[in-house]
Length: 594
Ligand code: FES
Ligand code: MG
Image (tube, rainbow, N blue to C red; front, side, top):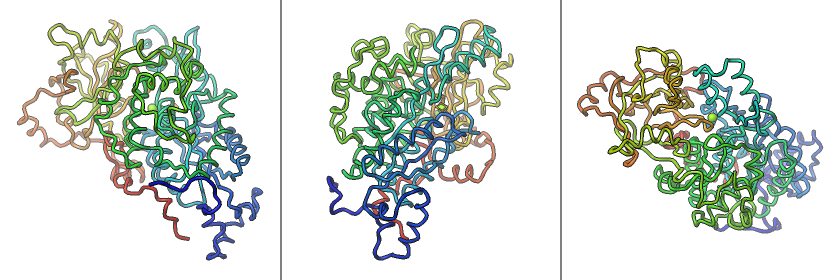
């Protein structure tokens, strides 16, 4: 639907329905008076200047985004210099590392809160401050639902962490150090020191975990200014980007460019490809599915395989590679990755973006000058680095991130002569992470190289919220023998910072009666990468009989929101969204009643 662009001359702003409404003098007075408290005049609010919300995701409870409290000043400066009025408001905090039972539970809650704020208050446009994992998808989901002009401003990654002369990256250091701890190479204090050294400054995780990935996705979708995602939090450019983002937010209102103009299917397919090339987080799958669903875009389960699987790994960044956020930024960041994809004919360059230009125009001339960090398309780190979509009688959908599958793992499990790409192993099942931690070193489980570790009860319903617990490490005795990873399967997720070869996000989950619920310890599981299948080798009759036992138990609801969440949430394959919320789209086109 072509929409009026250009000047404001003959178009009323949304906020004028509140502040300059001749039919509601009484309401206008009520709406106006309290804003005077911080220096805005009635004349200004009624002048037709765009009112730009700054959705503040930073707070003491979310350290990854906390510096947005300062950066927001730069955004305000940009808004004011461009002729707008800034109104900052808090969004529901989402801190990945500390929220129990998992921050994933709160993504939909933050989404709901943002929708109500952006819809119910006199905002003409919004700057969405993002950083930590779920802050980006919740913001983009809300932007799609409300559809007022919106732009993403991320807080950027922390500086590179160093420990004993080695780069140590967020999260990745935890997974690597816990293997060293299990092998007896380090003690607990050394573990803690390495972890602390991985976090040398303000900012979000400095690896290509979910935070860096989702902010790269926002940029790849065209929802943030070019080059925004990778600028480290403390860099001068980060503040300048805030100023430019504020200015641009005002222009977006004047030009009437809205999220649904940008969030097209072509933009999502670009994002899927960028995710492969950066070695991005498996959490991009449910989050992009959720954003697409709210935007009314058909992003299908198979798109990950069809568009993403064949794309090579270009970014040499942990966990799939060596480097961290600072080097990635200096090497050119997301625009340099997209430039490579563009040259290779893999990107749709016509996609409109918040800059007002096409993606091709945004990334023109952005070739990387650091080939240690961003590889040329035809000399990648690894071929076919996207997500392999898996199906079978254990689940209808799951994914495996191929960019982190090591050569050693491939050699051990996928290159057996005569059975290339096929592996059969014995299921060792854990119902929740407590069960895993209690029993993983129990000799009675008899775990060896032919075992497959299975985690269930970790999906949206089971956990609740879906937890990053599928990246289970082998028992200590195997690690001491040099076997640092076993095949794992689960209905939960894994941290974007993990380098585990896991089959993840299985849907439907065990708690919803998916196939994992009917698996028993000792069953043989067959994983066929060639066919993209994963099955338990159990008779259909026997599976039917096991269904009499019911699904494995999961914890009861712990809070009111947990209950509402469980009553409404869809599966990870579908984005774990609120069922029916996608029926609300472009809601700002109808002003709320007084
Ligand atoms: Fe917040 Fe990683 S824990 S970005
Ligand atoms: Mg995470």
